[in-house]
Image (cartoon, rainbow, N blue to C red; front, side, top):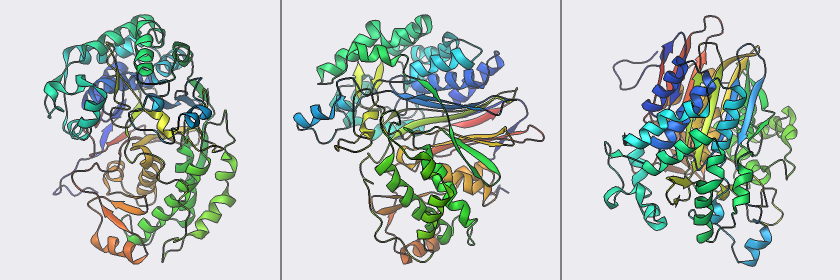
Length: 535
C-alpha cells in the first residue's frame, strides 16, 4: 500500500473507460473521443495525433508506430506494423561506394519513409468507429491555437537545441532558444498539413505538395528518397501475426520483428524460471539477475533482429524453453558474466524519444499504441511549409555487409518501439508499454515483474527506480538503495549514476482490467508529464 506521507501518486480507478498517455491533454482527448462514440482504437489514434503536436520532441506525423488491439469477446490480438521502409535506392553498395560507414543523427540517410499516417488510416478504416478527420480534429486545434510546453517536454527540448540549429529547424527554436515550461507554441504549417490529411486522407501526406516538400528537402541534403518511395509508403502499414509467451499465469503479446518485443518475451522467459528474488524488488540479487538477463538478450538483438521480409529471424528458437533455460543457467547469482560478447551493444544511439499510450473503452476493447520519431526531434530535418519533422529510424540499420539488419531497398530497420498486451483466458488484462528506445524491453520486463513477482500495484510498478546495462556499465537511477549498489559492485558490475542533467530511463503507461468486476486501474509514469484518467 502506498505511503501517503511520501510524495507520489495513486493508481487511477474507473468503471467505464480509461486512457493513460504521456500528456494530460492527450489523455483528455482520448476520453473525449470515446464519449463521442469512438472505441479504444479511435481514442488511441486521437491521442497519438495530439501528442504529435504537443510533445514534438518525442513523436510526430513524420515518424512510425506499432499497435496491439484486443477486441472484447474475441481471443485474437490484432497487431499492426506501422514502420516505414528504406528508399528503393538505399543499397549497401551505395554507402560503400561513397565511403559512408556510419550515419549521423541528422543525416538524410537515416530517414526511412514515415509510417504513422498510413498506419493511422489503416487502423481506423479497419477497426475504428470514427474517421481520420474526427481523430485529427483535436490535434489541429492545438497546432492552430498553440499549446503550453510542459516541464518534461521543455527538459528534453533543451538537450537538443544545437541539433535543431544545425538542421535549421527554427520553428522549434522560438526567439532562437528552446522554449521554457509554459511557453505557448503554435504550429500553423503543421495545422495545414493535418487539415489536408483530415480532408483527403493519408494520400495528402505521402503525395502532392506535402510529399513533394519532404522529398525535395531530403534530396537537397543528399538523400536517396523519391516521390515514388513516399507514394508506396502510404500503404506500407500491414497487419501481422503477434508473438506471445506465457508469464505468471498471463499471456504476454508483442509485435513480431522487425520490432524488438521479442526481447521482452525472452527476458520474461529467463526471469520466470528464477521466480521472485529473495531480497525483494530493489535487492541486489533481483537487480543482478535482471541485468545479466538483459545483457544476454540484447546481445541476441544486435546479432539477429531484422526485417523478417528480407532476413531470417529465428523467432521460435529464441522463444523456446530450451534456449531461454540455457541462457538462465549462464547467470550466476554471485558474479557477472565477465566474457559476454558485446555483439554491437553500442550500435544504436543512447537515447530515443517515443510516446506510448494505453486505452480501454466501455465495451472492454483494449489498445496498446506507440508512436515515435526515434531520437529527440528525429533527424531534425523540417520539411518546408509542412511543419513535419522527419524521424531518423534508419539509424536502426546496420551498414555491415552480411548483417541480417544491413540496410537494403524497401527494408524496414530493426525497431525499438514496442507496445505490449497481457491477456488471461482469452480476455484482455492489461495494455502496457514503457518508452525509452533501447531500454524498452528491459522496461517492459521490469514493469511486469514488479507487478507480478513483487506485488506492487501498477502505479508503484511504474514508479520503482530503474537500472539498465549499457555500454559496459549499469546505469542507475536515484532511489536504488546504496546497499544494493554495493552488492552489484561486489558482483563485478560497473556503476554509472544517472545525473540530474540527463534523462531517466523511459516512461510508461498501463491499464489493468479486473476480469471479475471490470474495474480499470491505470498508472502513468512520473518520469513524464502525463496521467491516467477514466470515467
